[in-house]
Image 1 (tube, rainbow, N blue to C red):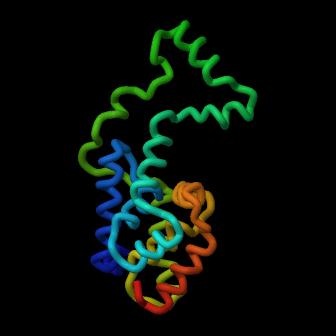
Image 2: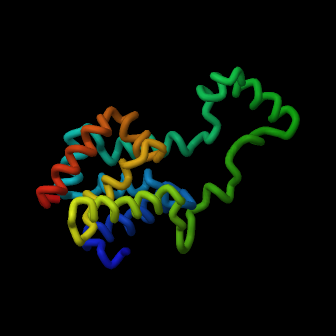
Image 3: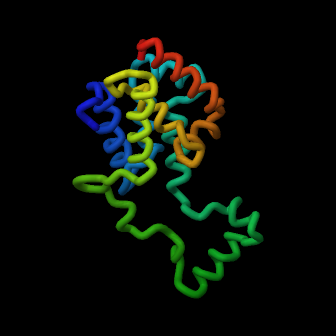
Length: 181
């Protein structure tokens, strides 16, 4: 499949690994692909900017999410007080017992694997290229793949950043159909 990727599309994929490594993540997810796409300088990147997406904002959102894997708001909807749980846990097991293990905070080395959803997004980029009757996979096709499934973290991040994801998909689709991306 990667033989169909243009130079820019390949750069998006390799840059996603660099993004994951910089964020000290041990996987490459749809969020890293989105961040990589936002660091580009092409029609796709400009279209994302027109919809309010910036690399710095998405990077900040990813960083905030990574800092505390326990979501106090989500737990609160279940009637769980995270502060009370932290206090009880620290009394029983010591200070910082719920903190991420130190090993997860080290810079990842070597190959960083793609998550199943990131792999699916890349497969979807091929499907979008085929649907548009195009032989090459460009960065715009990758963006269509990354924004294809509402269960992808990339879609959630884009929506939280204020983008109208449906309209952005339509904009990129039009852009790819005109072969300007």
